[in-house]
Image (cartoon, rainbow, N blue to C red; front, side, top):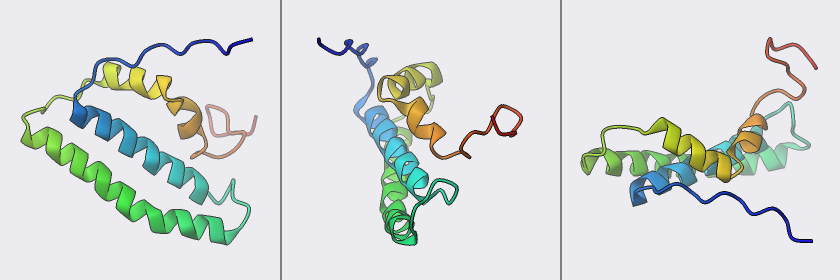
Length: 106
């Protein structure tokens, strides 16, 4: 049985694609650093060391967008791209485990 086919990514500029990719890389590292989900300090340390270069990549992608005159962020389009790339699950790993909408467990 084949897994369900993912929806296609929306059309993005190269710079927007870089922003989405770099943003998700930063999110993934923040999730690894998250002390509420961590297993050991070494894993968090390695992720924190990598965070600097990934944050710089995100900054550079946003700078490129700005320099090219892409001054508007098309949030709904970028949100669709993040959803296709499993962004909701990845971003959830940055938060506290089991936190409800009010920050309460559960």
